[in-house]
Length: 141
Image (cartoon, rainbow, N blue to C red):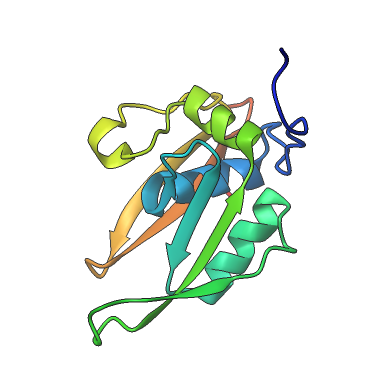
């Protein structure tokens, strides 16, 4: 007996490019993978960052929802959650997993793309993709 249901379509193109590397860095820093093996979630207070994230993954048609904190000082967050079994599996293959904060060791990212992260004002994590050019020059994208 074969597998049930339709074959997964794969919304996200997993060919490495600066946009994909940036989105992966955001998922690694502030995103999460569901335990169900399908959904990817990313939450931020920054609506422009959410739009950039969606654009980088080619999912600009996904609705950016709202998430409310129980703490009134923190207020409302923007949230994107979408299902893509193939992208989820690919994220696992490069080193992400559910409960990543307890399990992450390193990410398998091509040498052309590596991440620099730093903390701004002790609160928000800003992530940038840096590309190594053949002559060794480093360019901030």
